[in-house]
Length: 170
Image (cartoon, rainbow, N blue to C red; front, side):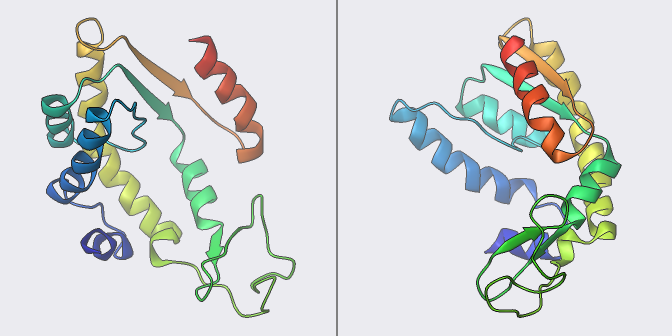
């Protein structure tokens, strides 16, 4: 609930909140013998240090997607507030533009999905994550079996197979 406040404002969630949210569940899962795939965590050095203190990281994947592509994909997302149904004009558009398929009620765009909010988040994200790539590159030969950087461009539909192939070949 506290994290949602930041996301609704188009801001990144502060480190301490993210660390608390992720690490509690992550440590518990690993203690039960489960493996984890953390998507979007860590995003900052503080988060990476917290992760390293609690868990062994085996593989790091960095997806390099142009900002324009990210902004386009996210800003194409619209929702039906009452039901939570999500539409995306790039690959899952509503039957009638701007209206929910089931109720005919108007769709809305979340504040954090608007292009200006996405760009603002991306700029903050890049400043925070640039040191992480270097950090994991340096750790690559020591503690982490590999750092995989996946370059990805194009439309969402065209990315599925090439990205999957790249991930399995490396």
